[in-house]
Structure formats: C-alpha cells, structure tokens
Amino acid sequence: MSPVIATILMVAITVVLAGVLYVWASSLAEGNTDGDLTLYVFDAEDAGGDVTTGTDDNLVRVTMTQGSGINWSSVSVKISVNNDAPITCDRDSGDGVDTDCMLVEFGDSSDSEWTIGDGVTIAENGQDLCTAGATCSIEVTITNVREGTTLDESSTVAQ
View 1 (spheres, one colour):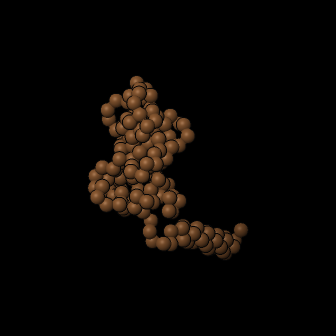
View 2 (cartoon, rainbow, N blue to C red; view 1 turned 45 degrees about the horizontal axis):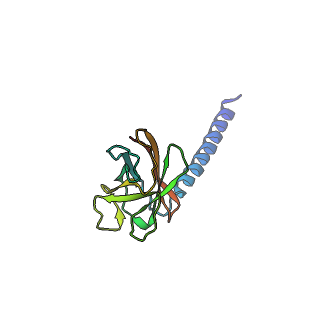
View 3 (spheres, rainbow, N blue to C red; view 1 turned 90 degrees about the vertical axis):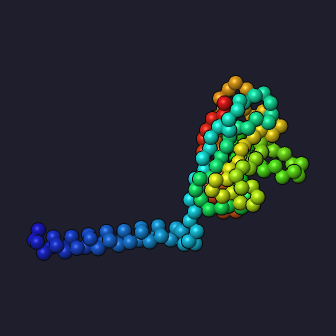
C-alpha cells in the first residue's frame, strides 16, 4: 500500500471517529437542557432504641446531606422491611388518615421543605413492622412524585 493511500485512510478514519464522538457528546448534553440538575444524597441509619412488640417503634432516621430544598408535597417515602412489599410512609398531618408507618420531622420543621440537615424518623404507626429481638433490613426509597424521579435508595438495619 502506498503512503498516500495510507494517509488518506488515516484521515478518513479520524474524521469518522470525530463525527461519532461529536454526535455522542451532543446527545449527552441534550439530556439535561432545563439547567436544573440536582443531585440528592440522604443518610439512613438505625433510629436507635430497641425494636419491641409494640406498634410505635422508631425504625430509621433519614437525613438530607446534599441537594436543594424540596417541598414536602413533592416527596414520597417508601420502606420495604425484610424485602416485603413497599409501604408508603406519610407525615402525620392530623387528618385521621393513617398509614402503617409515619414520618416525624427533625431539623427545621417550621417550613414546608426538606433541606440539608433536615430529616425524618420513620416510625411504626399502629402496625408491628419489625419483630422484637430481630434485626430488620429496611430499604428506604425517596421519590420526587412531581418529576417521577427517584432521589435516593438507601438500606439500613433496625435492631
């Protein structure tokens, strides 16, 4: 093969690769055109205290450690205990509608947003979700219901 043909082939291959990389990079850039990319990080840990046969045990504490404030009306928190079906936990609104678990806010609870440093204690609410003396594996899923996006999935144990 002559050096001229080899050079032409190398240039052609370089141009094709540059075009492929350009198309790939531009499609990545189009993935977030609204300029509102927010990453959330939550820390889930055992709430402390012993798990009993009662129906009001504190199971997990979840604290936001990174992200912008999100309105509570946009947040859904679900737990799965020992790989059982997920249960939606609600903030105690005093409306008489109860779920098997509830969210008790800590941090700045004077506003309607979950912000960095704020958190919730996930507690049983009339249902014994974690058996006394056992170690319960708890998976917590936090979702932005308005956007339909999962903000965090964490696992911890309650003892």
